[in-house]
Image (tube, rainbow, N blue to C red; front, side, top):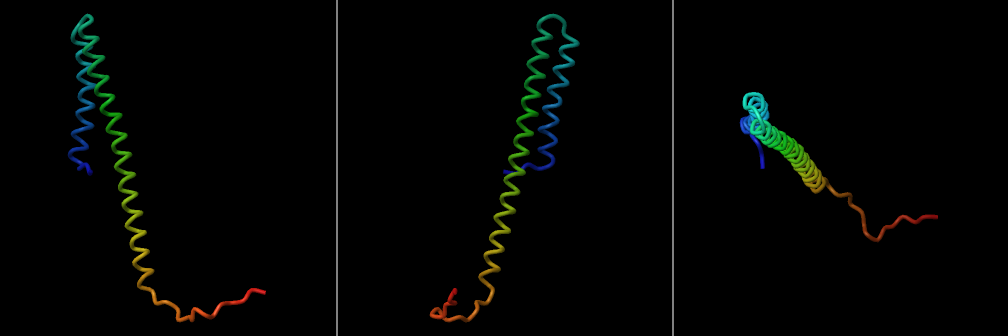
Length: 96
């Protein structure tokens, strides 16, 4: 799963807009209704922003893991291409 820059901006922007809308509703609407509306909107916005941050961390870890697998695959391919030394199997070095 990848996120484009446009979708990242839209997601974080929506979370920020919810926080701002909650603050505006809390200030504009009086009484308990304004407070509850502000609490809900700000809470949802902050939870969404936190979730998006964790998603970004997970996606960056996935990208790094894919890079490591690609490097490891390249290393194994390059090892297979190297010429092998011509040694007889019967020859063993004796340790004294």
